Amino acid sequence: MTRKEKLRRVLLWVFWVSLVFTAAFTWIYVEYAVPDQLNLVAEEEEIFHFSLPPGFSFESESEEVVLGNGSNIPEGQVRIQEQKAESVSMYGASEGSYRIGMKFLGIFPMKEIQVDVVEDMYAVPCGMPVGIYLRSDGVMVIGTGQITNEAGNVVEPAYGVLKSGDYIEEVNGEALEDKDELIEAVNASDGKTVRLSVRRGGELVDVDVRPVLAEDGSYKLGAWVRDDTQGIGTMTYVDANGSFGALGHGISDSDTGMLVYIGGGELYDTQIMGIEKGASGSPGVMSGVIYYGKSTKLGEVTENTDSGIFGTVNSRFLEQMEEAAVPVGFRQDVHEGTAYIRSSVSGELKDYEIEIQKVDYTSLQKNKGMILKVTDPELLELTGGIVQGMSGSPIIQDGKLIGAVTHVFIQDPTKGYGIFIENMLSH
Image (cartoon, rainbow, N blue to C red; front, side, top):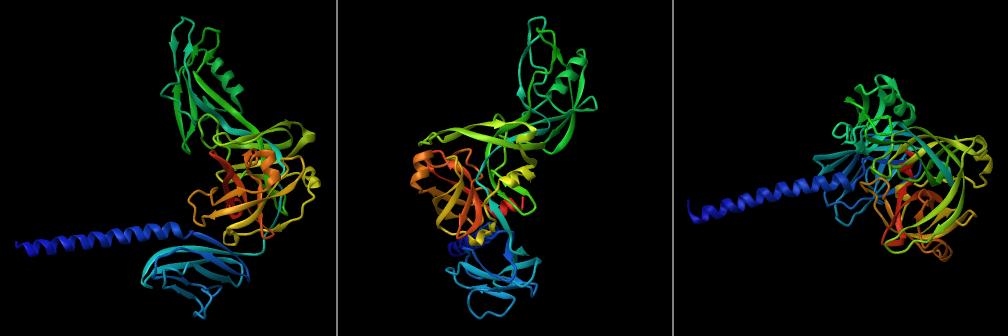
């Protein structure tokens, strides 16, 4: 083989590797640059922002969803021929779910997008703090621990059998309501092996553990467990049916960091007693008292998801609401610039000015779709920015409910993340 032939082979190899790499990179980029699902309000033109390479087209398989880019493009198709073309307009003629195809060079299918055309949606942006009580679905294992048995030896019977994040649902075939029932069942075993039905990673598994007689005279598994979670958060919205969304992120166990699987929960009155201002490296926090009781109950919690907690409020809560419902804004309505967060952190419900500094329309993290900065002097003086307990504070822009505060930046408490309200509504 001559030197010229070797060079030709190398160049050919480089060409094909580059082609494959470019194709793979483009596919991955487009997969994440364009959401799998979009919402349109019926009979309204919506503008979506996509940063795409040249040569991509969107094709509607239905006459109900019309595509355009601001010029006279034939109904049913729009082509993005220039890299600077970063927006696509869509118009939904009537309610329903439709599919839009996306192709490269009009030939190669890249992905399909579901477009849901819906009627105008309204919700009341709340901003009030609530006390939250959650009951886990089963008894959650925090971790295992050592026990000193009656002979004075240190043992750990659950080690390697139970794992952090496990949920014990049954003991010897008997369902558990709380950790007290687990303690009673283990004590009643008289040291005999017990069979535990455990939910682990979404699957049910059976494990056997032999309790140990501890030096205090009781039988123990050597596992730290928890069956409830409580805290203070902010109510984001209530809709016309009395359904609510709060927090904008899920409630995770403080020890394991895992999302808590719940069997139910309640909302209660709470009173903010103090505020520790945030500073760089130390996020602030609201402290308060939760009033538990039938007369202070505000609603039921039915779901705990990555996008927040959800359920229904009762008539007592609805009687306290004085705010009016506003239109819901979808992600395409969100833009950089001035917005407001609603909060009663001062004891009085107020709207505080913020600046939305970045909008990530295709964020892989559902509750981090936008970056915001508190600019309101009054809120900065009161809290230093965003503090723990303000998660769920509704974000209002251009008269629409567009999202909720979810996280604070540890190194800069004036800044934080927000979730698109549509992610909460579609939980």
